[in-house]
Length: 266
Image 1: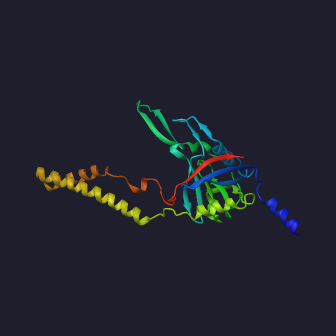
Image 2: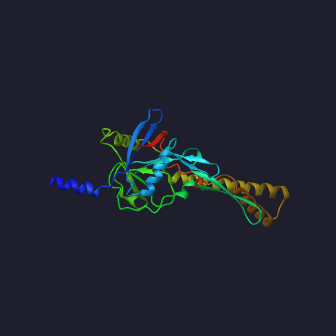
Image 3: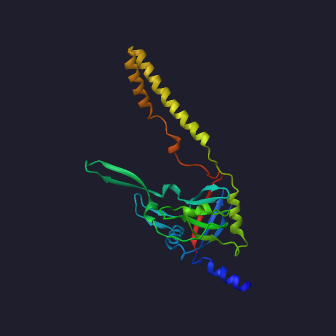
C-alpha cells in the first residue's frame, strides 16, 4: 500500500528537469545558497527565461545590456504570502526606444525589456506549500516569486515553475526562505499616501491663490479679472511637485538590503 502511494505521489509530482543556484546576501552577512529544481516540462518557456537570466542574456537594445539575476535584489517581502526577487540592477530591465514621427519630431519612449519575453505557458500546479518558485503568467516580467507558505491566491496571476530544494542540503534552502520571510519590510499605508496627495494639492492651490493675490493687488484688478488670475495661477502651480501615487511602489520593500550575488544553472 505504501509503495502504491509513493508511486502515485511520484507520478503526480512535476518533473525536475534542471537545477539552478542563487547566492543570496542579507545585508553585510556572507551569501547563502538557495538551490532550486526547475520544472522544464511543466513550464518550458518560463524555465528557459529563468535559466537564461541565471546565465545572462545579451540584449541589443538602447543601451545594450546583459540581463542577469546576478546583482539583482529581493525587492518585495509580503510575510507569509510571497517573496519577490530578480529586480534587475541599474535599470537594466528597461530600454529607450526612439523614432521620428511624420512631423520630424524624435519621440522617446522607455520600454520594459521583459516585454520581448511573453509566453503561453500554462499548468495547473497550485501554490499549495512553502518553497515553490513561480513567475508571472504570460511572461513579460523578469521577477520571480517564492512562497514562504501555501498561497492559492497566487494561482490566478502566477505559474509554478520550480521548487526550493531542501533535502540535499539538510533543509538549508527552506531555512533561508524562512529567514527572508521574517525580515522587516516597509508596510503600505493608504493614510500616508492620501496625506501626501492632500499636501501636494494644498501646496498647488496655495501657490495659485498666492500668485493671484499678488497680481491682483499689484494691478488692482476687478473681481472677474482676479478670478481669472487665480485660475491661471492654480493651473501654473499644477506643475509643482510630483503626485506620490505616480512614484515607485515601495510597499513591502525589505528594510535590509537583500542581494543576489550570483546565479547559475547547474
